[in-house]
Length: 417
Image 1 (cartoon, one colour):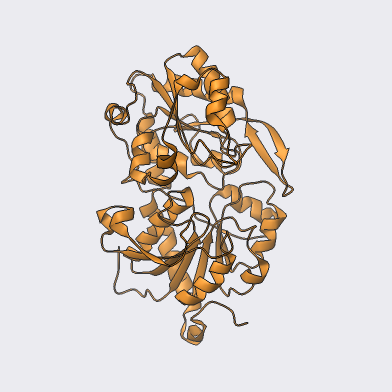
Image 2 (cartoon, one colour):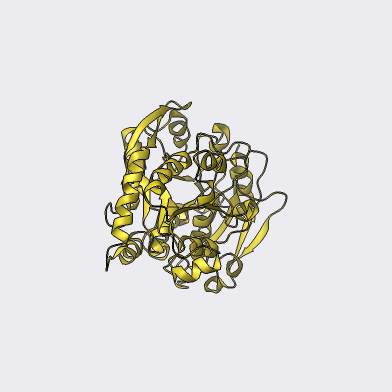
């Protein structure tokens, strides 16, 4: 990808979850930054939330991804005192001599006095509620540019008077790809003669943002009609603030119809390659999330040829082609949140209806679900394509804007105090 003839003078600091954290933001950060490094860009990373402590470390491409990125090194700065990285933006930005700072994170917790010190801050921002909360609008006033994950977010910001650039997230289709289902089920100790719904995601809120309660209740309805059905959970089961998944399954009498991975492995020891293998054990991904700025997991599932069920709210319907690469469940109620906006919950009965439709479709002879899902991702969400068509042109544009001869004195993007 590297082109030695082209200028690569722009110094970039990217703040998000650490590229080795395994979170959705961390995985996308990893995939994007190592591809920018491979193209010759000067990139460093600041880890917030799921980050590191103490001192900076060097991450190696072959360890985090595979040998396609052998020899590439990414400097990762640690978290500081502010959990969401307000102080990191200022101090790591100065240390790295960044010309531009990107954040891929929620912006509402960031501090105004620290954002005001940044000359060139670009917010790659998840908009996951409607209308956009005022505490998000307040922070985006400080942004040099705004990039949104999905059309939903772009349109919601337009209603508030903000212009943004749309660049969707993408996935590594060399890692997330169709595999032999029988082999994967054998590897993970799963029966061959089951119809398996999979759930993957963080479990850190109650009510559960990822829709775990609705997914389990819908599975109970489906299991009553299809006793070969089973459910697989890759998530933390024990968390002080999380949702009691096992307890609800046991309460509904389906605890023994569910598979759970080890909590430690789910939290700290699962590579993208492992997640891809798990997805290939599934027949359907259940992802009836209530708030998503994008929804990377349904993209990863479709890259593996597995159709997802998502909720008709926020960015979720944009991820799939309804009736072709997955299903969209209706919402049945909404609740008012502390940040004065709304969250919509998936309708349990309609999740069940979506499950039945996919069950019938996948049992049709010569169905094209695997190909349709895979082709959809290759066309719209392939990370290599997005880097070439969106991210490299953006960096080149910023380089011209910020590093023209008359602006060379503005090498460091932290404003003078």
